[in-house]
Image 1 (cartoon, helix red, strand yellow):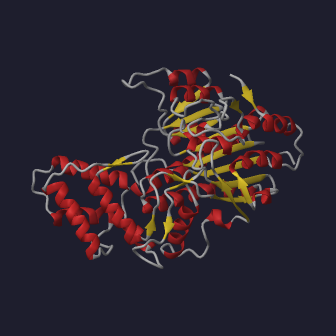
Image 2: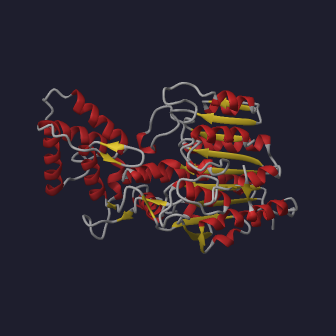
Length: 458
């Protein structure tokens, strides 16, 4: 495979001569799809509902800036092109991972540091072969090449990778493709509990768990959450590479919730991401002149706003606390209910069901207009059995009635959306640590990795 690394070839050589007072610990937090609207929605909940006088931890960092995110092929990037830009400093076309627009492999800053003797960890709460983590080790022309991406993770030499299932481990018929065996051959200890990850004495640990994914709002019992796995990653890197390490942490479900236009889901996952960040900040407090932290996003998803046409000059974040389920899970329950219904489901029964899971009618007031719309949709779905098309997004397919319920919930909570995909809006940057004032301005997403390496090499 041919590599191109104009920026990183220079910086990699320079990294070998980094000064003694250069940062030794680098934390790179990426909220997938976390635009300014998502941060402000979570901060509004933090202030109004939780009653916190202090803003979200990331918003307390002394340096703040913004990134443009367009790709080499579009004004609106996908996650692969955006991840490649953040990891390598190179623009590429949508769908391509770890390669430039001419399909030449490009080097990530994690690989540069690892070649220089740094420990490297990657943590996500979605699949570890997804675009953002993959951009730090993989080189493929199509982000869907999961088997190849998984093999390249094994070949990376990285000390810790965590996420949910490796999608390339089995073929379409469910048969093993030998990916886990290949990882083991490369010295990886594959574990599927955080307890096992903590107990492992291997230098290389890959934590994967099919249940380690899902929205914070769903609160699945026994599910490992992003803050816990972030803490495990830091513990592991401190053990195997105590003098220097790099850790990337992705809040992947922020993006999934935003694709679903699930405002409450976004709020809860940004708060969960912020809780994971606290583990890095606690480490920073112990090593303030040796640690740098940057928080940003690969792109904005959904065109989310706090405020919409329904609520006017206000919003109602207090209604989010009554939402006990994600749009994905709610839709799945409605589909099952519809399948099992023998024609006896009533409107009042459905209202009780919706109230238990979303708060509507029970704790969240529903006006006459929204009630009439939802009643009509209920009748079409259960009484008339109309074949209503599902609402399809990048990750899910939502029952039409469930979609209508969450549209009403967004209206009443006060969240506005422009798309179920990505937008070209800029994303925030928050940073702390010596030299990180370089991020306190407008930058392109290709500036982040080279700037970080220059700070490390100061």
